[in-house]
Image (tube, rainbow, N blue to C red):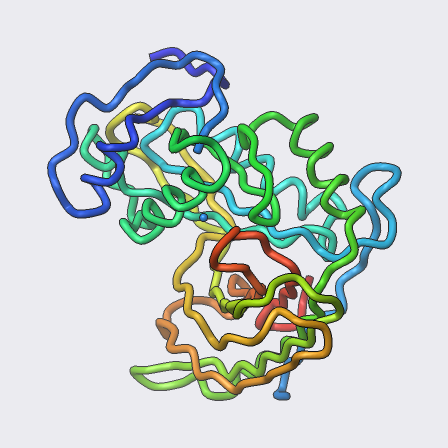
Length: 295
């Protein structure tokens, strides 16, 4: 199959079936252009900041959620772009999260990072942003906008627009890895949030994600058969840490223990915390810390 950079459309009902564990058939809905369809030994990293494009000065970091799959031939360019955005000087400006969806797994290659929970999260964004249409690769920017994840110019424009908006919440994050060792390992994480301005009369959620980078996979089936794929910022777990009111001045903090596999190298791990409105799915503040204290 030829590798084009148009998004791969999926029928929403089939995506829901996949999330529920039902067999998935009739995968392809077409490849036309369309809008696709959610303090310890090493504290929080003070990463360099600055706009990816002109005119974005003053904003907080932008959370980029890439919905991707190792079974999709149009996803590797988006995976590479997400890595490049951080490697090419945007660390601290963007906060990357790669959610591997599971609805491609029945077409010749099972993505070892895929989860039905991530497919369900993407479906939530479909309801909120794009009329229930779902595609890969999809990039969601701060929970408020989306685009095809491999379209560099559009991605940069939307990141710049998001960076121009001041964050409504200040998020603090510190990670202590001293609890690692033995058959079970854990990271001690302290998170805090303070609302800088009113965003909602309802509660907001503070989520904490653990990501891992540096994966190399030789694909032996499906659309990417014989390809060697490189995956960064793969979401290993996502947990809701707390809720707080969406009014100015509200604040909360919490200490968490995050269990991790002891085989995962510390240098490949990062912790992300972000505040999200569960109704609109807008993200109003975020922070990221690598576990080892390196960018």
